[in-house]
Length: 640
Image 1 (cartoon, rainbow, N blue to C red):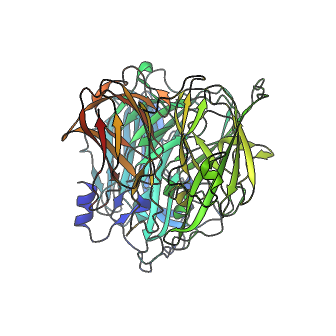
Image 2 (image 1 turned 60 degrees about the horizontal axis):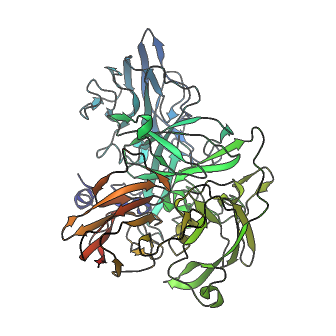
Image 3 (image 1 turned 45 degrees about the vertical axis):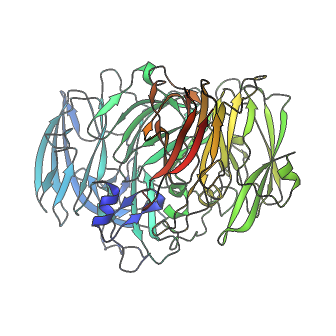
């Protein structure tokens, strides 16, 4: 069933954080929290490091009990939620549930016990595991024995529910009934490998400002800044597995480094990539029910983050302390109003060995942040303005498109960021491999006593970095992200070889951004897309017989875009050449139909060569969340 069909068949639904449609049960009084019955145990947080059960002679024996408990996604001093979770006998319930980790070929024998007062349906553990037809039902107070052989290596999961509807759309008490299954290929088990499970819990409040009541998004049972602090040492080889057990897509973004995508799956099957097939990325989408394996090495010390690039998924909207969608005081970083929450992991990388000396000379640049009140109803608009430009001279100017910063590979830059807006700000240089301090997360980037502050109104800060590779990147706000990114604090970066000019007739940045913030994520109105600052159709000219490069960047807040280059009603062809600024492996840099889906935070470079004069159509459409009545916007590509 598609999301739209689901909505049409349900009287109660939610566009949760502008990212997906899912049926929900609203609380009796919108925005209130469920009461906690007396006597419930505290649910422990599972870091997915210790395998459950007893493994002997290639047979794993495990008992899983479904029990109720109290879960604290914002730490033991935060708000408690009564939910069901899985446990081993004699131990506290866990979120995520006990980790099942075995070598390929292991026989897995599981006893499922249901201590809940409703029938429990479970997927992922049945004899037909891997077929999608492995659901089993355990009556209240009963137990059931299941057995399967772990025949294929990869990243999988199990999940349960007592309510009707999609297993991924589970809400309320059922939302945390899940756990990870890892099947290791021979000689591939790594003691330092980490497993991260994403989950959610939410209520809706149709009369609130945002349309949400209370909501949280978590990694291994916790929401930032309460997520597990991760520690690494410079030069370590890190291997992570990511599992998405929400009904939302999550484009996961790593600051400061590339990671190799080593495998992907859907919970039933998993595909491991050979070394020459592994693309490098800084943002990779993990679909609902999807899994991903990734490897990376931090070659620079300092503090970094790994987070979902949907701005709503790291905002006050997913902080349980938020009252009816309005930010509540929550200390983070250099300013109390920096409300980062939800799907964020912090990584502290310790220095090892001699550090690279800072350059002695830099190319100076200036970037001015501006705002103007009431640009989007009662909400302000923002823009970046390049120092020395005509826009800077016109102090009343608020450009609809921020400048593309053209930098040279291996040429150090010192960018003086001047905040002439009405609130604190910060700039993240998305995809650029740089030192930690200038990375742009206030109160976190840097290390020790040298931590990046938010830039207060009327103040400035100079950041220095050296772009090490040619490619397409972007810069954007990392403070009050949900509003500032939607309202104009976004721009493109192109890094080229020194001395090589960019040919504007064949090399084009195509930056998709929002036309203002989405205030109510349930009812809308939902933000429309801008392309290079344009709100609607326009025309670009290209020359037949020449190869043209399109640098496609999605820096919308919570909206995934489908982009197509059409000849008549049919896609023409283009070649995918780069992802997030890194050249694609030869096996992936191929000619293909010219259609592409870009999640927020993703960048693709494509090349196409028109063969004859005439008109092509570049169409773009918001595909997630599916906005009723949305139509594609057409840019005419006039070939001469």
